[in-house]
Each structure stands twice: as structure tokens, then as C-alpha cells.
Length: 261
Ligand code: BTN
Image 1 (tube, rainbow, N blue to C red):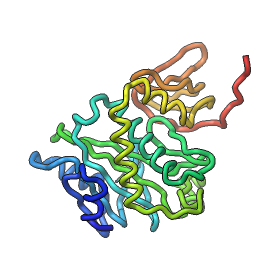
Image 2: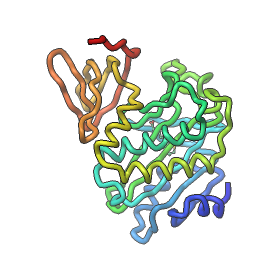
Image 3: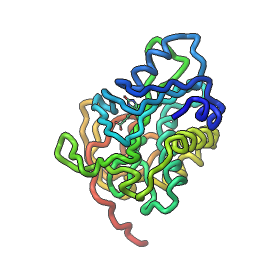
Image 4: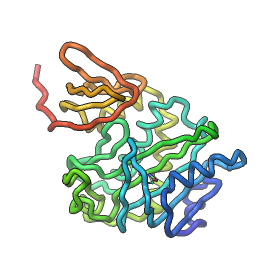
């Protein structure tokens, strides 16, 4: 990994921070954003992240072959927050698909931005900003590239992750992946709202599934009904359609066969 190559492939970047080892690229990103003179966008990359964080206070464990990085972006480059989350998931899924066209089945996105393949998680995204800085956002991305997560159970004993190499037999080049994610994010963020929602619908992992969902103290089960025009999740419970702008999916069933009309 080399700074000059990265700046050449992603000329938008004002600064690249490379580390052999780092606790968390997101933690460093938040520290850097506190400095009002920081030039954006920037990239933080480490080949060994030792204390990665995931969504909802969980930790993100990295093993050799996993890709961990954070883009620091100007908040003004993505105006609406709900879509910001979706767009990064779409960018990562499409980037991996474009680099592994033989991937079957195609990668999908589990609301809001987990990237899934073969019913397992292949990449996760943690977007953060700091109270002291409204100028920028840290977009932390962890991708299972060449590690073997399908052989390592998670804290609940489940084997629920997979890597690109396990799925396709292919070892992707890290710079190719970073470049593709950045370029696709740039394409998605300039798209019309309806096109983003359509793109999400095309690779929506939760489509036709029963899900369990948590938002604060509320836990519900219901039929997933897609996302609304603001990117909020819609769930049918009993006779009601409920909409949530935030929250997390705590469980999901298999896809159901659609009834033909
Ligand atoms: C999730 O799915 O829970 C989000 C995982 C995000 C992990 C990435 S790895 C790079 C960046 N640094 C961190 O500490 N977390 C994110």
C-alpha cells in the first residue's frame, strides 16, 4: 500500500493516512475531524486494526486479510442523512460486484448498509460524526476480503460472516477496492432520490422476509415492506405499517415465495 498510488487512483483525496497497525480508523478519524483546518476528503487505512468498532456498540474483529479503512468526507457532500447510510452500502456492494462479476448470488444490502452474500455478512459500515465537528463525517468500512470469517463463530456461536475470497476464490487488490468504493459513492450521491431507492430495492436483502427489529426500548416482529422515499424502514406488524428512520435488525427469516396474482 502506497500513498502516491492511492492519491493517483483517487485524485479527490486531499490526504491519505496509512498505518501498519491502528486501534480504530474511525477513532482516529474522529480525532482528526476535531481539527477545523483539516482538508477533506481524506482516507485512513490500516492493515491491522486492533480495536475496531461496529454499529450498536459492538466490536468489529479483524483478522489477516480483512480490509479496514475510513473515509473522512465533507458533510455537505451528502445532504440527507438517511440516504447517506444507504448510499455507502450500495457503493460497497456494487464495488465488490463490479470487481467479481462472477459472484453468484449477487451481493445485497441489508438495511441500512450491511453488505450480504449467501445469507452472510461480507462488509459492515459505521458512519459517525463528532459533537465538536459538524464539517465532516467518518465513514468506517470493514470488508471481509481474504480472511476466513465463515470458519470463526461470532459471540453467539453462529457462523454468520463470509469473505470475498471464500465466495469467489478471488483475491482482490486493496487499491482497486478502495477506488471502486469511492467512485461508486460519488456516482450514487449525485443520483436522484428515486433512483437511489430503486437501486436499493434491486439488491434489498430483506425483501419478502419476516424480521425482528429494535429501536430504543421497542422490539417488534413483522413483515419487511421495503424503504420509504427518505430511506426509512417499513415494517408490517399485525394490521399496521410502521416506519422507522433508525434502529437495527436483530433477526430475519428466509425469503418467502411471492404469491402470484
Ligand atoms: C458494523 O457492521 O457493525 C459496522 C462495522 C464497521 C467496521 C469498520 S472497520 C474500519 C472502521 N473502524 C472501526 O473501528 N470501525 C469501522
